[in-house]
Image 1: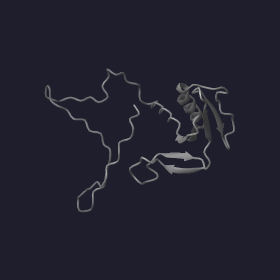
Image 2: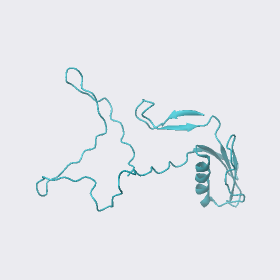
Image 3: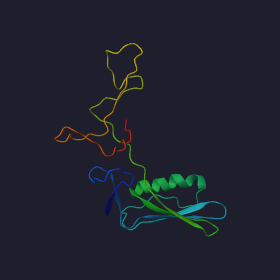
Image 4: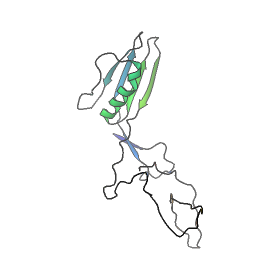
Length: 159
């Protein structure tokens, strides 16, 4: 399997960017749509040990997204999806499974919407209080100057 850096990463440090494991040959889901608009899906995998749970019969177009997302999650990686329409046209795309929700920090208790995340005192009544989040750091030069050449995009909020 190959590993590549996340394509949306703004930095070039491999150790700082999330990675996606991409198999050399992608599993493929071939969707054949008939004249009535129903679709049949055939999943072709090269090295997936267990059978992929996929409907044996035709499904409606409204179910197609849910079924394809389920296939990608079962595979645990990207899947090439090819849709064959009744008029002979074909469409292909790569479908990534949804990332799992990050597990909560067991050391940090859950907070409700009414509980403050940050609290402080000593402010004047009705004073505007700014809260800053550090998104980057840099080292000062020997002459006491510091510079930041590019700001990384903030990580996706996880809670």
